[in-house]
Length: 357
Ligand code: NAD
Image (cartoon, rainbow, N blue to C red; front, side, top):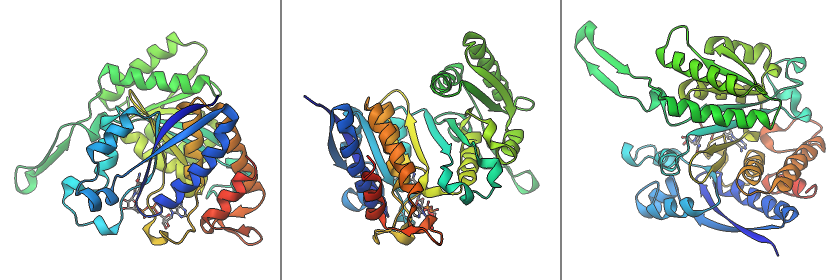
């Protein structure tokens, strides 16, 4: 008898419904390999929740997420909600979910599929072996520290933000990085600015302690400025990059650009509660409702969900292999289309993936 897992599906806004629907079809087909069935629970968040309930993250959505095995999210936001009160902006849904589910870690794999090597802005020989994961701390550091605006006057007008890290916050993110590296090539690059920042010196001290206690892991330490350079000079050297909230925000966008195809990159946010899976791109309001969005970032996020939250490793492997085959078969949505390829819409790309599952 198959086991049932519950997944909250939050379409969100813009292309959200199109890409989440596509990913659900692929997951339903793939998880039979692990003898699993999915019970999908649709909930609202973001702009569509503002329209329906006057708030971006209803309590009912949070409750469903807390008790589910995983959450799959499309994207939230769009120009319709640009002028709503700051306290109910669509992005508040993401921050609220991170808080409610204790999601302290964001995992962003950056892998360049062979078929898409020439989409990278870097020279093909530089991106041949690019396959790394950025492990970003998500709930600490300067984004959540104290801040003050407009103190003082005239030339003395002052604003400040405080970067703080507690030992427990660094230890738990290092543990995720070590676990991630152990399942990959066993190499971690811990990124900080320890030559300047006190919080970075604590970060590095704890990274060194963790390295000493995990001798099977090969840990090295880079300053963030050097990392930004190395990501374009030699991105193939990285396996797992672990870093703070602020540095991770910036480096993960740089990583995305290295791949050259925004519509393909998945992410997972994990922590103490239910994990959340979503593509890294936004709600693409400029193409919403036309059925032409690239569903692969969401489909690959769903593969991560199968691996990390649903205990469905065969499905995860099958989905990733099927995406690779669909790309090798020349199927391309408009965002990655080039002459000579087979142009498909969202449904066409989903069908192309499904045929290889
Ligand atoms: P975006 O990622 O939505 O779009 C940038 C460009 O990439 C657009 O031209 C879009 O058409 C294209 N694109 C993105 N994903 C695509 C896909 N799957 N297939 C084909 N083309 C794709 O970024 P943006 O325009 O800056 O933001 C639009 C909205 O999304 C804003 O309201 C923003 O706040 C929100 N946003 C949400 C999230 C999230 O929910 N996590 C993340 C980023 C942006």
